[in-house]
Image (cartoon, rainbow, N blue to C red):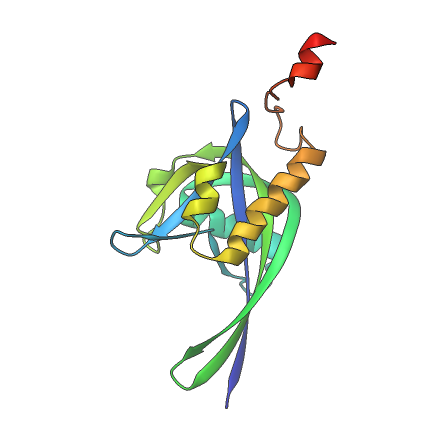
Length: 160
């Protein structure tokens, strides 16, 4: 059996909103949509980072910058009689500018979701884990996306 190896890159694009964050997801198919993180093939002479930024911009209509590498997801699938192994490197990204309505023709929708809804909306468990990794990173690095979100005070903090 023929095996084809593919390399892709993508991102979890976040923007601060109040005391939380919003994530930009892409949707494919007629409703109900399959919601995923933007990603795509790494082109010749392109780094994973460059491909991730390009794919996020193309598929979401928004510009971002890389904050940190989150993880690599690998999986197998079949196309006809060919077996494919795809490795996708995902990055946590900070939103800079753009409008999701300017997404390209490869996706049917691009939309902001709050973090709790993001986890519920994403189709694939490995992408849900990337959200968890991003939240863990942001808990340790609260200013990583620029303006730190407002953290609700606990009752102990209010009385001290």
